[in-house]
Each structure stands twice: as C-alpha cells, then as structure tokens.
Image (cartoon, rainbow, N blue to C red; front, top):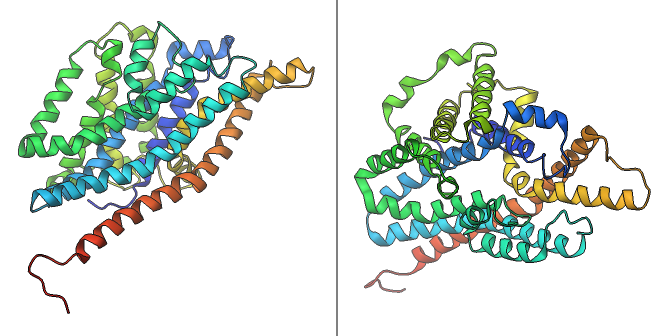
Amino acid sequence: MSSKRIMDIEVLRAVAVLGVVFHHISGNLFSDPVPLLDSISVWVAPWWGVDLFFAISGFVIARSLIPALRSCSNRQEYWEQTRNFWLRRAFRLLPSAWLWLALVLLACVFLNRSGAFRPLDANLQATLAGVLQYANFRFADSFGHYDYGASFVYWSLALEEQFYLLFPLLILLFRKHLVWALLALVAAQIFTERSMALMVVRTDALALGVLLAMWSTHPGYQRWQPKFLRRPLAGISVLVVIGLLMSFLATARFNASFYNVGLIALLSALLVWIASFNRDYLMPIGVVKRCLVWIGSRSYGIYLIHIPVYFLLRELIFRLQGAGLPSPAGHPLMTILSAGVMIVLLSELNYRFIELPMRNRGAALVKRLGTSRTAVPSPGATSC
C-alpha cells in the first residue's frame, strides 16, 4: 500500500470534523436553547465523527507502522523505528494541542466576563489532564458530576495518544497473533453495554481501522473493490446514507442500548474501507471534493479550535450587548456563520505556522537521528 495521501480519507476527515463541530453548537456556541437545533438533534447527533476519526487513525497509522516494524531484523531496529514513530506523532500533535490548551487557559483568565470559558480551577485541571494525556479518564469522572473545563474535546486526543504509545508494544507482544487480538478487542466491545467509563476508552473503531490496514496488504484485498460506486452519485449517496444512519444511531433514543456504538464503529470502518482504495469511490474529483480535502487537511486544528471559538464568540457577544453595540445575538445563523469564519481563519493560521513547521521539524529530527546512527562506525571498523 502506498504511503501517499488518499483524497477520500481526507474527505472522511472533513465529514468527521464537520459532524463534531455541528454537534457541539448547542450548549457551547449557544447557551440558551435554539428550537431548530433542538429539533434537529432529536433525529441527528453527529458525535460519531470522533469514531470515524478513530477508524481513520487506526488505518493510516497501521498501514505504515506495521510493515516498518515487521521489517526490522533485530530488537534495536525495532525500538529505533518505534522511537521515530513516537517522535513524529509528538511533533505532529503536541505543539498545536499545547498551544490551544494555553490559549484557553489565558482566555479563562482575561476573557471570561461572561463565564463562557468556565471556572479557572476546572481549566487548570483540564490543562493538566490534556498535557499528561489522561483527559479521557477525567472526562468520564466529571461527566454529570462537575465542570470539566473548556478543553473537554481533549478526551479523544488522549485516547489516540494512548493508542499511539501502546500500539508498537502490542505489535511486539502479539506478533503473528495480532489479528486475533484485535478481533477479540472489537468483539468484546461490540457486545458490551457502554458505560461512560467504557465510552472514553472505546477502541473498537481504532482496532477495525488497524485490521483494514493489515488486510489491505493482501493481494486479495483489491478484488473486493466496490467498483459499482463509480456510477454517478453512487458514492456520494452511500456516504450520505451511512452518515445519516450513524447520526440516527447516535441520538438520545439509543442511549440505553449497548449496540449503537459498536454499529457506528463498524459503519465508520466501512467508510474507511471504501476510501482506502484511493479511486474516488466516495466522491468524484470536483470543487466540492477539493473544499472537503482542504477541510480534512486542517481537521486537527479545526477540532482543537472550534470550542475556543464558540466560547470566544459568546464572550464577544456578551461584551457587545453590555456596551449597547450591535451583535449577532438573536440571529443564530449569523452567529454560526461568524463562528465558521473564525474557525476557518484560525485553523489555516494554525496549519501554516504550527502544524506544518513542527511536522517538518519532527521529520528532520528523525532523519538526523538516522543519519547520526549510520555515521557511527561499527565495532572493528578502521578509520582512514
């Protein structure tokens, strides 16, 4: 499998982050109920975007990491590859994550007249949980009991970081039995009722993404291509239908069931499977796809930024109203559009000045470490 970027995967990233951004509007961008949004939420709850992200992460990481680790001829090479993987992930994810944790903390101190950014003590604890990667456990503990703080989206980032840390160790531990271990992990979760504690460690979508990546290396994988999706609008129709089905399964009417989260994981993996062939099965090349690919490439920043933007906009509206100045208050569509513009601008700045430079620095560091190792003469070698 080629390591080049798959455009349909970027489309799925865009769909995932747009779903989460929409899901978080109620109660975050708007503190008071909005009747239209409340009516929509009865039938549509796109928090499943997080599970789609998990399936994508499992697939993308495993398709490069597993072959790299399994090609190692000794334990030293294995740990060097693992170190390089951890370094690339750290430079890719942590700078943006820590930047927005710091900005949220500053906003809580200096831009919190409305109380939108939540109490300072909650944010201090949330920042610590985000930096130390246990935000998912704090989120489960706080749910329905106390205020988590303004950086609650970090629970899913913590889970992914834990996956990145443990996955190379699982590959080493289970070796040829990795497939069976992952299948057991998926089966155990699909048939288990999800308490809040289990919801924040749900790894079925991640495991399914890894299984897809492992299957994709087999010659028979190509024989299962869904070529019928080449027909006009077929792929888009499948994407819309599956998205709506997951949105329905995620609504409150299924909260008491134990199977909806597992079905969402399976449907997320189905979408990743369709996208994995890199044949534009989900969406033909065009203006819409190019826009979604742009969103997908900035999806990490959008995920980090959208909640701070929602709270900042609430603070600005509060101050404008207090000063008797015009504001978007009372115009939900205008408020949503204002938030959208701010998210786009800030995510683009974050991508250009934080994500790309730090990703390149991580790659350069890994390359430098590899070069320095090969430059060290082996025992017994003679110098000129």
